Image (cartoon, rainbow, N blue to C red; front, side, top):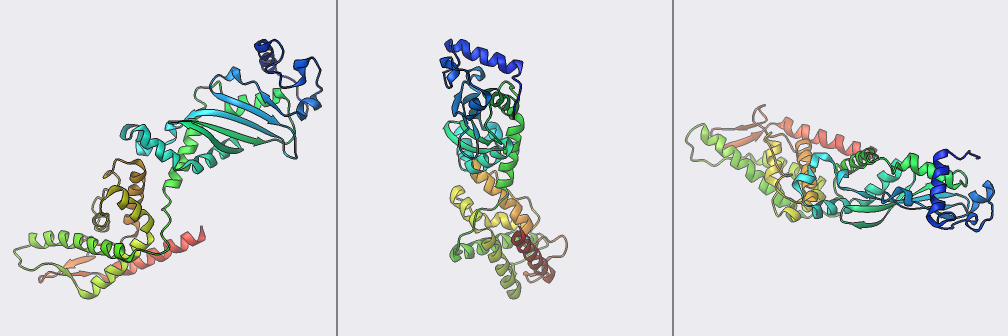
Length: 340
């Protein structure tokens, strides 16, 4: 590929000559007064002079040897704006908390950045939220300095103060998609924690149902589930725990709170709040995900559609359709996950 040198590139080369009186940092033989043919120029490995870009570009290097020529560009970016805006992180969390969130998702950021620039991205160093990344772009053939500068200008836009907006949005979308994915479940479910989850969710149901029962008149009885319904509900709650054990254990460990009562609130159609019960951003993300999981996966136990009824003697009956719907939704979800 032969290409005419643009006037901007010619000016850039002239500026580079003025830096040291010859040519940049003398990275090729023009600095020694030896003329290079375009073919020779494309074939040499060399570091480009990037001082015209200020702090936006830290370094750039052309590797013309090997089967796959490459252009490597290192640049520094402040990553705070890549956090999904839904989290309102800049208003609700301190920089250290945000940095931990970003650091835990470095592989997601590197993959998204590589997709955006059409190359391979790698973090080089970080100072707070200011991070230096290197992008390695594969080239069809060796290129001249002029062509390399044009790639930097066009694709990295170091002179455009708003060039990062689209990149930040792209990374934020990747982070949001990542945060929707549940944490891996342990190979073996902790049966004691599973039992506690079911116990506490049923206790929350009893507390709620008792208030409804007492509002209907004076009663000495305590509400309780019919034996068969309690067995079915426990089995359903055990399934919910097993399907979300990774998230449940992580959220409980970090928040030091019990999520079972919130799971019942979701099942009963009430507002739940697992997200705002902690000030840690990573834990908030898990809490938000659990809220969605509970709404989608818990058996529906609200009283407004006849799903749950309390007899005069305090016995609670759950309509059989509740468990049929629960099983059907779970089977469908498992099939979808297997197909992905």
